[in-house]
Image 1 (tube, rainbow, N blue to C red):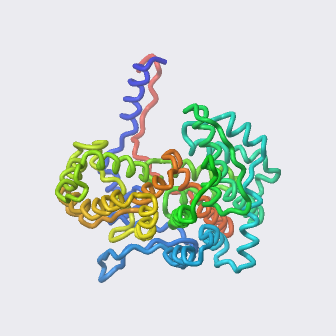
Image 2 (cartoon, rainbow, N blue to C red; image 1 turned 30 degrees about the vertical axis):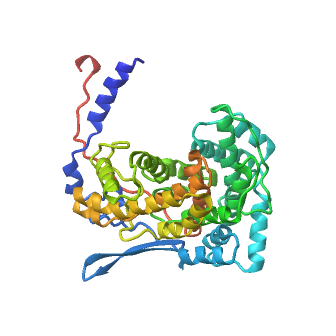
Image 3 (cartoon, rainbow, N blue to C red; image 1 turned 90 degrees about the horizontal axis):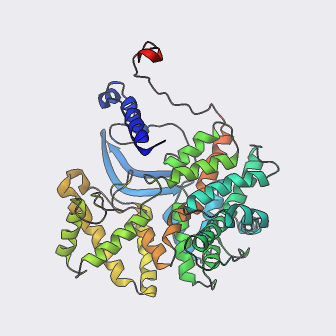
Length: 447
């Protein structure tokens, strides 16, 4: 088929599928499962995570500082205690999300041991599905690897709680290893760099193992692993309504296997509308650093941000990446937490000037956006605004920014899959109204 043929067919396809926008209003279609005021349509109930960003006062939506809770516990408290008590917060968080309570010392030890024993992958799996089949997309490599793990599971189709829990723990433990190995294969075959494979250390935490396996010398500081641990905690869950978690509920409701469900969730997260803009924030920030001579001059920063908003600079989309969120208005609690702790790493790594510039951009961006549209005066920095900066300071390659999100969110997906199984109901099947008029069949010689 010639390219011109595809172009013509594509034009026909677009014309045949275009729906009059007025029909969405006529039939009160909640596009994106959102009401006219932007709030989500209630489609389910959950114990696992909750996002709170507004209150209703006399019928009016009033924005409040963002709050994120895991099983009813403020995520800020989880982060604070992990840092102050110097233990692995992501492991505690994942236990909480899965089982509904904070682990005791004994439960914590058993759980960490379970994960440690399951971090290593089968040798044949590593060679055949990762090293011998590299991909330029680490997310696609992870999704393919998850589907391939089905063939290594002698009880892959059993969707009992006990079996799905086993599968979930194995995937939570294996995700960091799959991610790092997929990246090593990528840089070796696509960038022609040396290939080195470090076995995971069962005595290290998830954050520690990522740095340990990723770096050639396997070394890292306590502050580095702590910041990565915090980032993992903050990405682990975000309520049942986000796209990939809803996909988890949706596919689980069809009574399919765990590997198919998690592969679907990975596909959702990979989408540019969902997976976060941490990489875009880093690229935008580098552009701003290069274009602005005086990082302390607010007017120079404002002038360049106006160029970005007016589609005259950076990628010319008009977006200031990392500013604004679909739910949070006053503040994204994840961004606030990461920002507070990132400053320590910035000092240790010599990024103080860059960190100060990032804060200035956060402060000035809403005002610049409001010049275009008044509603933009009520926007805040989201977690992507600081997560990419943290990953950059940690020396984590850009190709792993989104896969790191998946390494963390696999916990939330697993918790929601198990919740859907425990509360087994009907298959999720939303309604679509057909708006095509009836047509008579025309014989081919008369068309």
